[in-house]
Length: 255
Length: 250
Image 1: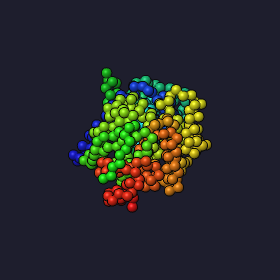
Image 2: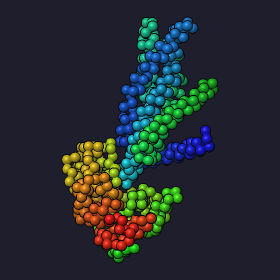
Image 3: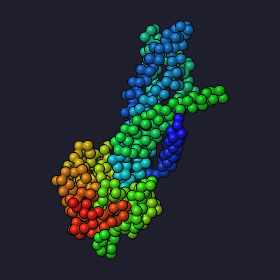
Image 4: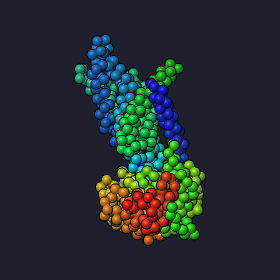
């Protein structure tokens, strides 16, 4: 990376940190925009449900189908439900769902706020006596932080249904036996890190989308760039958070 | 340089020595302006001369680097957020592109300024105020339309209705007729004059549309190189021999 690139990267990281600091300052002070928070929760949570559900189902199915030959080769076919379910719940579903949300929610927030910014709607809000940071940023970030874990929990369940169908494509296994095998290995310590990191995924996706949209410049060209870079940076952030979460989960596992 | 003596007995807006730079570029460099009660003052200048920056600094959407700015005798710089919101409730701002909220209907757009300024109103009262505001701009029965369904002129009218719904005493218009056809532009000019007459408002109108300037200005201030270069009525400035002023009227 050239020195100029490093400087702009550090500048941007500093600005995102300052933006995040402002979020924590504004989030706890009244007035609270409860109606907008509920509306955003509906937009972010409910409207992302079909996409996340479909992806989770396919992931469960595909991972099971792909793992079957290897497990068969090792003579461990009966372990398939437990192995697949642990990898789905601990890693694959949270990360894939977060990446899907980075694309859908991150770009949506970046483009919406960017467009509001260049058409002076944010200024109009300010002169109307409404704090636009509270109304637009705080509500979206809180909604995404709360909705992502719910979406991922739901996606975990759906992916297990996908895995059940995947297992049944080569052999016949009852749903009762499948769930017994799944929950023999899958326990609360697998679910906890997965759900904990999904709060951070939601927060990171929304705060980056909001930052990019809120600081958009240069008209409609800037709106496109804001949406694009919101997706790129939040995707990168999802992987970084996942890496940190894996390390921390590993440390706590051995304690 | 032309200067006309103005009635400073009842000034609503006073700007003294306002300065604003973006990096090395000086946009406003010691700008002075006084607007009296019931007066429409047009700030005339080329594109990029800092006209919009001027009213944005006045509303504290941008922070001025230096200078004194007073509205109703209240100094704007250093005002607390609460006091600023209170002051803003007496000021209407029409943005260049109308700045209607895309995701809201016309009715919701008009209700939005009321949620903070007049938050003790009943639903029925809000409905009446919205209806009256749309009636004032000649657009009844469009409450449930989305901004994307409106023409440019209709958007401006709804923008004016949204501005008027809080019954402001001071109005700031940023390029009110830019991008409109001459007929719609004329209608907006009439509307601005009607508002002035009906509500006895004081206004700063930012424009480089000479039709708008001619029809709406009680007084014109020419902004050149960040300063108040000249001041006078339309006819006084039109008859000026100064080439910098003449270029606006040719």
